[in-house]
Every structure is written in structure tokens, then in C-alpha cells.
Image (cartoon, rainbow, N blue to C red; front, side):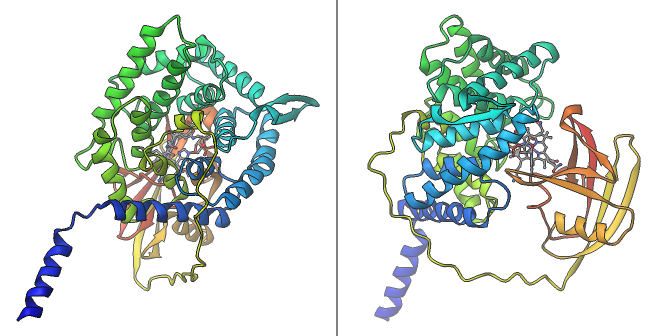
Length: 427
Ligand code: B12
């Protein structure tokens, strides 16, 4: 009888325990940190500066691996940016992330140089020049060469590096925030972009350089804050699962108390436990927020007395056996001229959309596609011989039974029969 009472008591204790104790929170942070560190080993393509930022903004470190990664950024990412600059490409986002990654390791950014057309100039000179070109494009064509997310990254990186951001450059961001306010998100800036703009403008405010239009800067910051808060869903996410990390980072940077972000942090922890953030890029954007930091925190990093306790235990390789159960996917392609084609294919349950597209391509049924690598993984760039180019502001939009996908072809998994629509759209 006594043992029964004891067992019942223990069970009651276990179930009454709040699910999100401090212990379980730090365990989750540790496991996300390890996932990021492991992803460095599995990385294909060039090293990801966003992952470096998240590792550096964490409270727990493996300093040897972080320094190895910094070296790989300084060679591989550096070279890829150098060739993009030689080809006169707009790469402000990558230049900015590279700058922030170097700063987050307290590396002297002024020593980083690029040689383009036999002319040697510093990273920051290139970043400033690209920002000027972006600004010119906004003046002429009412949009940046890349997008406002990258434009904001550029402002943030210059500001965090202690470079005075040209008033005309920050004014363009202020104007964009004010101009787009209240418009539907599908047409205007995304929550991710508002978040990045908020961090950038907050940095500009803190640097004290924007003295002429201080009132307008405050209004824009308030607009960003209201927009982020208004995007809160009933489940706590701001925007969607993948914008919440940046949105929380921005709110913290703009001075919101941690408590005000608690439901969104809880939503991210819940999703992290449910393995929603299996893409390292997604982890890299939520982890700083869960550590109650933001990209703005890089400005005050001194890299002194850092923890060095993060170790990776060897992991047993997980062998993924394709499921015997097959599901039907009908891939619908809508070209820019609105020509519609359908391609049915049976795939093992749990296949990625990319697996399904590869299968269709191999079957020679007239379906072809091509992809480009990006920080988020494979980006669908060409379908049935038709490109959706950034220069024309077109892209291949993905949806499942009419609902837009919130993941790309490499991450979205097919669990049930469905119609996937791939449509050449403008944005
Ligand atoms: C701008 C943007 C776009 C633009 C990109 C073109 C442009 N010039 O502006 C457009 C509108 C085309 C776009 C499309 C899509 N996007 Co988008 N996009 C972004 C945003 C806001 C900024 C990206 C950026 O410039 N990064 C900075 C630069 C330096 O990094 P980069 O890797 O070089 O950037 C390139 C890639 O990121 C690529 N890209 C953009 N979106 C996506 C999505 C995926 C899955 C991949 C693989 C690549 C990719 O375009 C960038 C510019 O060339 C991010 C927000 C974020 N939190 O990262 C969302 C974001 C990356 N997009 C997202 C999604 C879901 C999509 C779509 C799948 C939507 C859809 N249903 O079709 C499509 C991609 C489909 C495809 N063809 O493969 C999600 C990805 C989440 C995830 N788990 O994978 C994000 C995080 C937004 C969100 N919160 O939901 N996107």
C-alpha cells in the first residue's frame, strides 16, 4: 500500500512539473548548439556566416571549432564573394553577414581585403559601395537591387562595425518601413524583413549618427515594433515559425522586456522540441533569440573569458530506410505564360519534395528542373526550361493543395497524397 502511495505521489510530481523548467530550457539550448556545431561538418557548399553568428552569440562554446569555422569563412566564403564582386553581382547580404561573422569573433574587419579588377579594397569599402548602389536603385526603381532584408543587413553590419551610416541610406529604410505599413504582407515587406530593419535602425539610433531625422527614426522604430507585435499568432509565433527568431531578436534589441517575448520564446522551444527546426539556418536565427540576444549584441562583444565547454559526442549514424508505403503526389507546373501541366508520381512516404522532383526528372515525362544552393539549402530556380530570375523579380512559388509552403524543396516532406503547385510568380 505504501509503495502504491509512493508511486502515485512520484507520478503526480512528475506530471505536475511545469514542462519548461530552467533545466529543460538549458538542455534544449545545449542540444540546438550541438546541432549547429554538427552541421558544420555536414556542410556542403561554402560555409554559412549565419551559423557562425549563432555559435558566437551563444553562451556555450567550442572555441577550437568556432575558430576553424572562422578560417573557413575567411577562405571559402571570402573567395565566393570575391568572384561575385568580380562579376559585378549585388551581394550586399553576404558581405554584411560576413562582416557580422568576423565581428562576432572580434576579428579586425579592417584587415579583410578583396582584389577586384586588380584593385585592392577593404571589405567595408565594398560594403559601403554596394549600399550606395542599392540606394541608387531604390531612388530610380523604388526597390533595392537585392531586397530590403539584405539592405537592412547592410545597414546593420556597417553600424555594428562602427561605420557612420550615410543618412540617405538609412532614410531609404525608414521610408520603406513607413510606406509599407499596413499593407498585406504578401505584397509588402515580410516579418523577417521588418525584424532585420528594426535591428538595423535601432543600431543607427544607438550610434547617434542620425541626428537630422531623429523623430522620423523613432516613428519608424515604433512602426516596426507595432508590426512585429501585431503579427503574433495564437500559438505565440510572430509571422511564422521561421520569422519568430528574428522578430524576437528585434524586439529585444528595441528594448522590449524578455517577459513580453515569453509566449514567442515558448512557441520556438515547443517547435524546436518537435524538430521543426531541422534546417541549421533556421536554428541559426532562433538560437540567439533563445539566448536573449540579437545581432545587435555583436556590437558590444569583447570575446573575453568565454566558456569552452561544448563538446560533441560521436553519434551513431542514422540509417534512413525509405518507407514501403507510397503516396501519390501530383506536381502541377504553372509557367509565366500560365500554361498548366500535371505530373503524377508515387513516392515513399516521408520523401522530400526534392526527392519527388528528382524522381519525376529521371522518368523522362517532360518534367525538368534546376536548383541553386543558398544559405537555406536548394532553391528552385528553373522548371521545364523556364528560369524565374531575381532580375525580373520572378520566382517559382511552392504550394501544397493551395497553401503556400513554409519550407523549400529540400526540407518539405511528403507525408500524405497531395497536389504540389509550382508557379512562376512575380514578387
Ligand atoms: C527575400 C526572400 C525571398 C525572395 C528571394 C529573392 C529576392 N531577391 O528577394 C523570394 C520572394 C523569391 C522568396 C521565395 C521563397 N521563400 Co523566401 N525569404 C526571403 C527572406 C525574407 C530574405 C532572404 C535573403 O535575402 N537572405 C539573405 C541572403 C544573404 O542569404 P541567401 O541565402 O544568399 O539569400 C537567398 C536565399 O535565401 C534565397 N531564398 C529566399 N527564400 C528562400 C527559401 C528557401 C526555402 C530557400 C532554399 C532559399 C530561399 O533567396 C535569397 C536571395 O537570393 C528570407 C527571410 C529569412 N529569415 O532568411 C525568406 C525565407 C528564407 N523564405 C522562405 C520561404 C518558405 C520561401 C519560399 C519557399 C516560399 C514559397 N512558398 O514558395 C520561396 C522559395 C521557393 C523556391 N523557388 O525554392 C522561408 C524559409 C523557411 C524554411 N524553413 O525554409 C523564409 C525564412 C521566410 C519565412 N520566415 O518563412 N523568398
